[in-house]
Amino acid sequence: MNKLEWQAQEIEVTESDDCEPVAVMFGGRKRVECIMSRWRISQEWWKQPVERDYFSVRLEDGIICEVFRDLATGGWQLQRVYD
Image 1: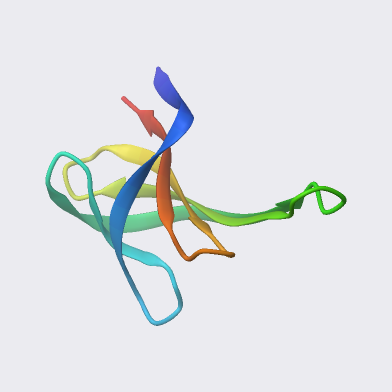
Image 2: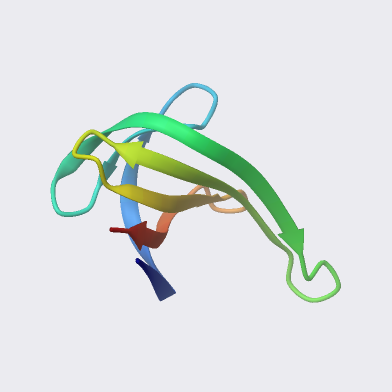
């Protein structure tokens, strides 16, 4: 089962020098135990560009979630939580 956030939720993320998530803040600070996958999307270039780096991560408490970094703003958002 998973929960998709239709309105992605802004979160605070501690990132590495390579802009990968090291820790996330939602419901308390949680260390990223493992980056399971990573992908980039670039779409709607003909309107307003959307460029994001997505990460599927497992947190130290076992929660798996998808977060993304908006490449234009550098802001992080929570997209999906798996339970």
